[in-house]
Image 1 (cartoon, each protein chain N blue to C red):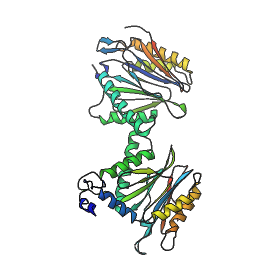
Image 2 (cartoon, rainbow over the protein chains, first blue to last red):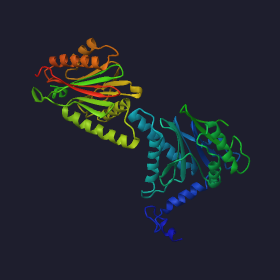
Image 3 (cartoon, rainbow over the protein chains, first blue to last red):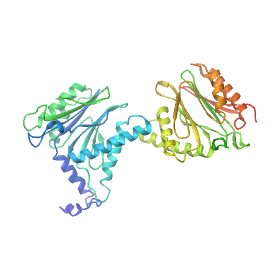
Image 4 (cartoon, rainbow over the protein chains, first blue to last red):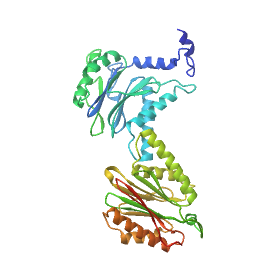
Length: 224
Length: 204
């Protein structure tokens, strides 16, 4: 692989025009636990597997789905510690916006600022990209929104998306099942079914996490 | 002599029925000498938000330029106009940034918010907001404006009556103040149109 000569320094493009570190980061994401999100007509749902390394781990201490503001939640696939850093930065950005404008930050603005942080780490010295892809679910004046952010800093708005280990099967499943006029309850149901598709072992309330936001604009985690 | 009284100004904003009026005098002076009689203290930020800046003219101009800059970037990023409440908070934050070396201005912000509800507010030179339901005043003639507005104000005035009230309040107040006057500039804003009128008062 001629590209491997260019993987030592992030600031160098490989001859094929790729930034190899970002490719590696995406591989890290691709081997992470599956997570997915679905945008319904009246809300958004995000969900993830929560496979713990041992039965001795206290599963209540593990929170893979976090809220960034009262009306925006996020889930990830990839490296947990990198996720925590991004959550911290995003929350701060959301609060700074509020301090300046006394308005809750619109979902697109928060996504854009978080993506800008992720991009910084692909163009600075001595740092590596974040090994996570994020699914941001929010509800603001522009309605329900679902965004995926990649380690490169690029972001896309999705009607439904999946990331992590089982991504291709999950996406095929979602493509078949998604309808534009889906209600939030249907979307939650579909999300759980999609997770079940690629689940190794028995799916239960203890090894998945679900985050939901509806027309009340309050992000909450479904107790399972 | 106070730095706020160097150039002289008078500003008033009043709430009417689904409309608001914002008015200023037209004098720009250097202490006792009048330099200009067509000075604009009120600027449009966008169709539904107006900003008046009283106090030191140079600070008013610079602050205005900074605010327009911020608002233009906001419009590009968020693809929408700023609500008046949001704009007021931005002005307050910018003023407080200079807490220990402030802009010598007193802004008056007036706009139509959600559902065409009129919004007015003023703040001091370091960003302490004062929201009011009826009227707000600023400038060297502010004490006189308080008195005039308090006695002339009525709730839910239609645009035409609001215009008359604001004009009378402004002209009678600036006549008492030697540092403001030389006519008036009144904007009456409804959800559908903006009416701009020049008043002729005592030209001294």
